[in-house]
Each structure stands twice: as C-alpha cells, then as structure tokens.
Image: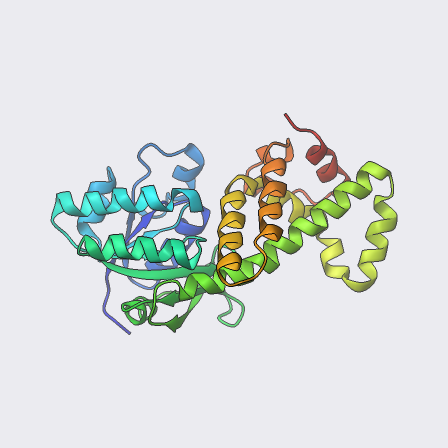
Length: 294
C-alpha cells in the first residue's frame, strides 16, 4: 500500500464523485471543481473538497482522474495538460473513460509528451459505495507503467486489477464487457419497444421470463436507466465498433447500436436523470415515454 496522496476528480459526476468518496474514505485528500457545472453535479460532488477551478485542482494533485463522456475525453485531457503546464506540475493522469485502445494510445502519447504520467483505466459496474462487499464491489481495471501505483492507493468500496503494462489493455477489457452489458440492454429495449407497438408486450415478456426471469423483472428499470444515459452511450458504442473492427470483428453491429442509442436519446424517456430513471420500474410507463420523441 502506498502513502496518502491528493487525487483530483475531473469531472465529479455520479461515477467520478463515487470513486472520489471511496478514495477519501481510504484516507486520501480528494479535490474537484464544479465551476461551470450543473446543479446536479454540484450536489453529487458536495462531499468532496471543492476548489475554485481546474488550475487549482491540477496544481495540488498527485493523480488526476478523468471520467467523462467518451467524446469529451480528448478535450478534457487537453485542459488538464494545459493546467499542469501553467502550474508547473506533472501529475499522473488516470483516463477512466470508455474508449477504444486506439483512442487511448493517442491520449497516452499526448500525456507523456507533456511530461505527465499516464494510466489507462476502465470501470466495470455502477458507482461504488464505501463499505460495499469487496467480492461484489465495482471493479476498476488498470494498465500502464504506473498502474501498480494507482492500484495500491488505499480505497474503500471498489476493487482494482492490473491488466498489463500497456495503455489500452484496460480499455480493451471495457470495450468487450460493455459490448455485452449495454448491447444486451439495447436488444431488450428494441424487442420490448417493438412488442409495445404491436400490442403483445405481456406475451413477449412472459416468454422471455421463462429463460431470464431476473432480467425480465427488471426490464423497465434497466431500459429507463439506459435511456437516461443514452446520449453518452452513442460515443461509447462507436468506440466499441472501432475496437471490434481493428480486432477483425464486424464493426457494423455496434455502429447499429450507436444508432439505437442516438434515437433513444431523442425520446422523452431520455430526459430523466439517472436518479429518476432508477426509481421508474413500470415497464408500460417506460415504453410509453420511450415512444414519445422530438
């Protein structure tokens, strides 16, 4: 276990704030800024030490954690590196975004070229909770030269696993697991949306429940939660498609998944916050909101 460090969270949304609280419970100083952010982000980050701006956050950090929508990963990294340059510091950057190995390799090159360390990270599971059962808690996969150091930081509520020495290996895990988790949700969404339009939802759900009772029981909540995050899932599906294409698999499948989530993002259901979506379990209500779009 390494000594206590100062960890900066950029940006402190639901996942970033939750990780920050777990590091904080482990004894670290955790800082963030909510300058220019929404009221929801301010509420999510209220337990963290809030500083005026990104420069102030980066200036004191040993580790800067970038966790944002995939299509924002590049601009966020550039802002972090610019802040580090202005402050004359060289923190380690943990990129914990849902990105392809190819994209991560480019970010790693830019980071090390600026004199900072780089660790590739991938989160599997929902936002962690301090005190969670260590066998059931969120997993953070890590790769890169400083991955062992990040893995050794004391924390309470999530697990870490070092995948290998190269940036892109941890993200490769994420691209594979997310393709199953979010791809399966998109399949259920499309199937039940179609069943609703045809007036056979109950029959279809009963049939699916014979083989997957738990998923059928939670279908409404799962679809609502995915819809609430659908705008950020579009870029993630595109990153998965790129990853699979480079690996020699067919990219078309997840290009199609990106189109599914792009359409869902235009629905009334997508206007719910993740917190509101999590409490919405009535499948008929969910499907009705999904059918209402721009």
